Image 1 (tube, rainbow, N blue to C red):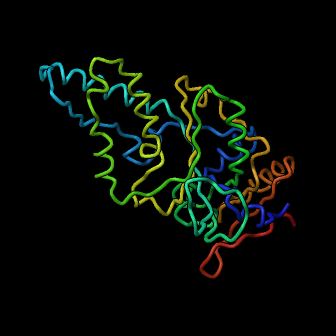
Image 2 (cartoon, rainbow, N blue to C red):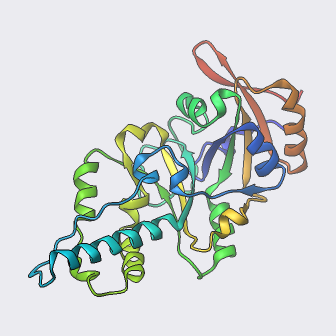
Image 3 (tube, one colour):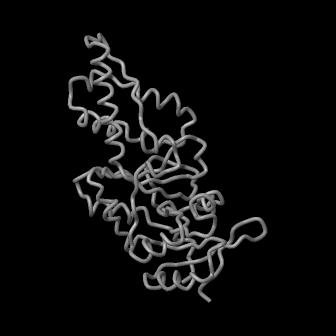
Length: 279
């Protein structure tokens, strides 16, 4: 079934670039999408650890006691941030990128599946697959699975040209909030209060990714042990320019079973174009 471009060129559609085997075996074959830790990313801000630079007004503690409290707070903060799992996608461009996802269709700019660097970095150097999802359908799946148990966050990532200043301002924490208090409880509240800066801000060097992100608090690692069911969430499947022909029929069969549109990109006259595979 060919892809109806009108179904993916809107603000509800988000694109996940991945390797061929992951797409075939897990996402299309098992209808499962794995949410992972920040430590699995290529961003040092996320695979590294947060360092606190706290201040304490009228410090009545010895330097040794203060350092001990500070160290415990840092450990708790990094333990909590590692308990958040997320999945990353690429958005269609839109002239107005507000804080809330507008799922109405309308004029968009550059398509989320048509990004050379994303194909090169995340789409297995054009051997992989880009899967178009419905953001609203994924949100409904998450809420159905988690309910009120843990927070769920879905939003576009913003790109920060003053990351060093803003991250330092974030970690310049008031030590009075954690000194003498239970550190995990403090860290949980700290992350909730700063969820946007921690998980939905990235350095401007990543701006071309135009990322949309799903973030969940998952202290029991349930999304690593049991990935998210994405049945009925997939809108279309797009194969890379170098996707191996031997696997095309497998993808076509999986897509037809689920009534999903599919296509393959080819490089022609300086741009990527969709190729009809349903012939």
